Length: 447
Image (cartoon, rainbow, N blue to C red; front, side):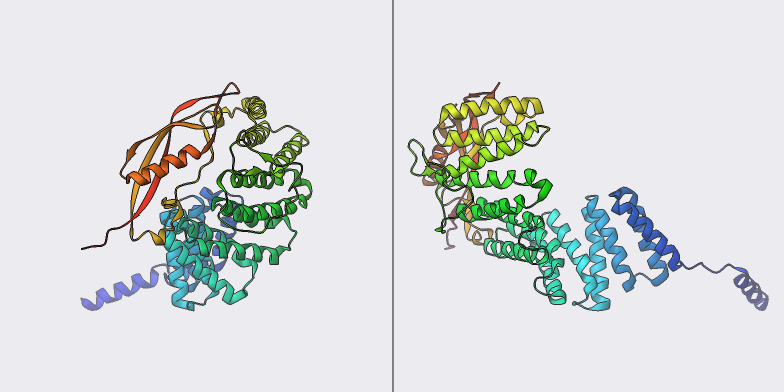
C-alpha cells in the first residue's frame, strides 16, 4: 500500500508544472515602463511598477540579494514624491541594510538610499536623524568621488534644511559656503545655476541679522542673474529686493556683525535718507534697487500684476520706514490697483511685520543646543498698528515670564515697524494685532 502511494506521489510530482522563474527581460521591461512613468512625473502610475519590480527581483534573486538595492531605492523615491513618507522610509531602510550587509559601509550603492532616507527624515521633521544620515551620505560621496564632486549637490540642500531647523548655526554657515563652492566648481563662477545656493545662503544670513554679508551674496546673485540671458529679467528681481531689504533692516534693527562695507552695484546711488527719529540712515542704494526692479517688471510684457503689485509694496515699505509717508501712501495705492487686478488683495488684508528685533533673552537668539539648562516662557502681546506703521496700545495679555522679560518684549514691540493694512488702497489702523515671543531663563540648580 505504501509503495503504491509513493508511486502516485512520484507521478504527481513529475506531471506538476515547474514554477516559472522571472526572466531578466521581464524585469527590464518593468523597469523601462517604470522609468517612463516616473520621468513623466506620473508617480501614481509609476508606483505599482516600482512595487512589481521589487517583487520580480525578489522572485529571481531572493529577499536579501544585492540586486534589490536599486529597485527598493526607486520604490522609496516614488513613495517620497507621493508624500508617502512612512513607506518611503521603510523602503529606503531596507535598501540601506541590504547594501551595507552585502557591500560594506563604503559601498557606492549606499549613496542613493542614504540620500533618500535622509531627505525623508527631513520631510518628516526628524532633523537629528536627517542630519546624521545625510552627513553619512555626504562623507561617502566625498570619499568615493572627491571633496568637490558635483554629486554632493542634491545631498547638501536637505542637510542644510535639517541643520537650520536644529539651529546649528556654525555648521549651517560652513555647509552653505561649501555648497556654493561645490556649485562654482561644477558649473563655473558665472553660471546661473549657482544662483540657488547663493540665494539660499543670502536669505539665511539675512534671517540671522548679518545684513552686510547677506547683501554681499545678493549682490553676487544679481551679477549671476544678469548673465542668465533670456531669463535675466525674471532672475534679477529677487536679489534687487534682497539688497533693498538688507539696507532697510540694517537701518531699523542695526547689525550683529562688523563686516567690511559691501560694494554692491547700487551702493550710494544718490544721497542717503535720514529717517525722522532714526539712529541710522537709509542707504539710497536700497531705493535704487527697488526702482530698478519695478522698471525691469515694466519692460517685460505682458504685465505680471501680482509681481508688479509686490514690487510697489516693497517700495512703499521703504518710504514708510524712511519716514516719507506721502510717497509710501502713493506706492501703496498703486500696489492695491495691481493686486486687485491679480486677485491678490489678501496680501495686504492685515498688517505686515517689516522690522522686529527680539529681546536678547528670546529663544530666537539661543541655539537649541544651548537651551538644555533653560526654562522657556511665553509672552503674548496685543497692540494696534497705526496708519503710519507704528505700534501703540501695547500690552501683554498672556505671560508666564518674569516682569523684566515682559517689559523687554513690550519694548521690542514698541520699536517694531509694520506695514499698515490697506482698504481700497488706503492705509488704515488695525487693533488687536498679536505677537508671541518665547523667552528663556536659566533653570534653577537642584538643591
